[in-house]
Length: 152
Image (cartoon, rainbow, N blue to C red; front, side, top):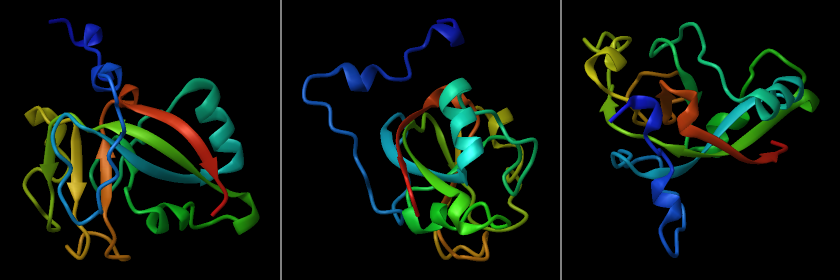
């Protein structure tokens, strides 16, 4: 099947679909859709809602879109702007194939996508991030839908 013909959102077409919202301590189940959050500026949120997400160039887990199932985690970002300019986007994310990255220097820390994974997941309290909260990196922005905007 051609990659661009894949329907990432087929689960939503099923009768009685209700997106799961698991606690951030459990590894996301491959191929499922989750409610996640992305903290950003008001200006960036407007651009995202208009044109969609774009991969970051780099980061702790390499290129991708950084999200979390932990609203508190997302509410902290971006770190360097006035709180009045912050907003959190509530998302639906189809995680696809998930790779757990649970320590600094993991052999796939920045190359997970080249090994066939769609999402990298850092569990909370793994020492990967200073906040010790859960973080995910989604390779393909098409796996993400904005469903709401929340003031932190």
